[in-house]
Amino acid sequence: MSTKKPKPTVNKVVLAYSGGLDTSVIVPWLRNNYGCEVICFCANLGQEEELSGLEAKAIASGASKCYIEDLRLEFFSDFILPTIQAGAVYERKYLLGTSFARPLIAKRLVEIAEMEGADAVAHGATGKGNDQVRFELTIMALNPKLRIIAPWREWTIRGRKDALDYAAEHNVPVTATEKSIYSRDRNLFHMSHEGGLLENPWNEPEEVMYTLTTAPEAAPDTPEYLEIDFKEGAPVRVNGVAYGLLGIMETLNAIGAKHGIGRIDLVENRLVGMKSHGVYETPGGTLLHEAHAALEQLCLDKDTLHYKQQVGLRYAELVYNGQWFTPLREALDAFVQNTEKNLTGSVRFKLYKGNAILVGRKSPHSLYREDYVTFDEDDVYNQQDAEGFIKLFGLPLKVQAMLEIEGKGVSRYRSPDFSAFKRD
Image (cartoon, rainbow, N blue to C red; front, side, top):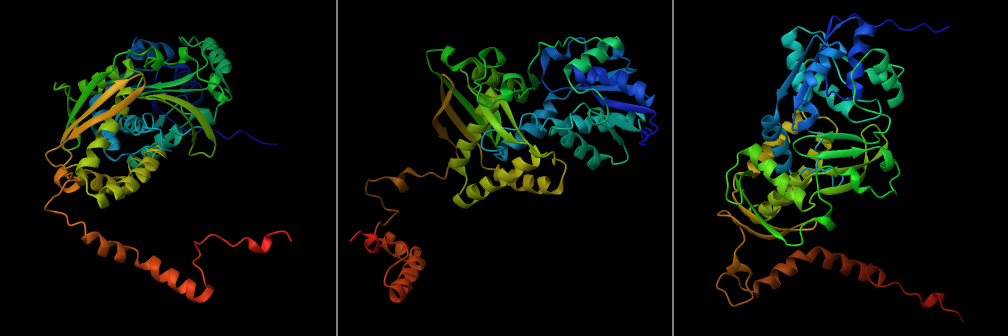
């Protein structure tokens, strides 16, 4: 006969709170199951209208207080920008908009828990997703003494209907209904969509699902030119106007969204071992990523650029897997920041119906020299020098072929002889 394991004693818990259905029912669930005081914390990362009335809703759900903090500037400067500068893209497409938001939320969650004298923190991430890992690795890295409560791994609620029933039973104010089919995450950088029709990756996403970007076919029929100026790898102006970091992000989002920039459809490999199908809208982030990469083409030497591409792959894995606060990411970031010193210049795009077409880049630190690459006569490059270079560069291939011909009579790269298989 199995006995139910008693829950540990918890006096006060700080909950990462969004005001959505799941975290709304977590408030009374924590009180009912742990008998503890519940404090809610919501980070303003640019989700806009979702913050309306959130404090009152948290209190009505049973929380003793609710922190709502504007972390948008820190989000951009300390998480978005370093990831873009690293060239980090997960599985060729995903710009990590949700992934690098979680460590910032968890970081502030720990700080509030320490300030409030709480002995536990809680989150609403499910047991199937990546976010549980991102939250908990951050908490473990910053304060391993805090107990972590993950209701989705404990409670008997198994879906939206169960959660709605629990909310009704405990008079929790929620706006979600059983007709809401998509799971979304929005912040300053992007919007993600999962669930609903997307659970079958053969289904084309319905247009009404998109919330940020214009459909490319409905975008303006006239191209728009866009110029982004950088100083040491950070954007400083858009079309000649210095908006500040948040203003730049908001401006690029608006311009990119108007032209249908930044839609991607991806079947990705979750850390927990399963694949998931998601659609992301990242208008401004796509423009920043492409612009920064264009400046790297111009200003970084070959070896550094090629090595940085490898760093970008590893950096993306760390961010996706929730390993932001790790020695390796800090070490990689030190390398990345060193490569940003000469990334000052301007990048120009032509935006047209979902496409950000790169049409120009310039920098005072450009390594591109027109007089070196011209097909006209020049004084800096003797084309006859190439003969000796090619001989040395190809020497290993030549030696290998000579040995094979001496032993077998033919190089391994010669076409096979099929004459023995001809019919009589």
